Length: 138
Image (cartoon, rainbow, N blue to C red; front, side, top):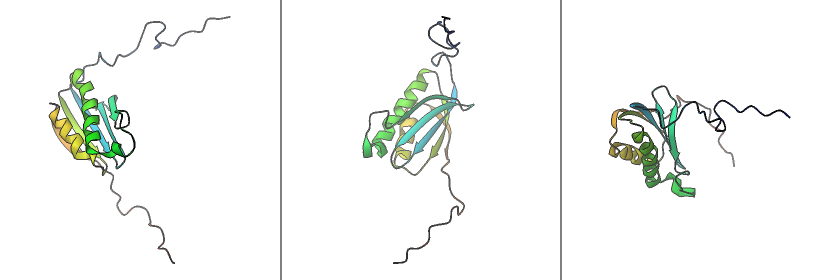
């Protein structure tokens, strides 16, 4: 019986490739995705690698409460608290979607003390996209 060789990044042999807490991130991008049912806040570094993320479901909200502004405020606070500990001072904000959590999450980000270089709305808009279904004949 041969002994299985542990992977390089596994915990068994004591080595781990990259620690999340060890990285210092001075500048990043905060992505807010606000749908009618949920709000997801993802914080990435400038290259696009995700540092922390949070959603209304992971914060403990269930059902229709996930789409509320209060849930969005809590989600943004949770995600940003993790990156402020890692030394983030400046950020860009990208907001996507039509949900109620857009303004509430932006307010929570502003209150956190991170300097915002710009806030951009990246909601996808169709340029007269798909053909609508045929009208019903009754």
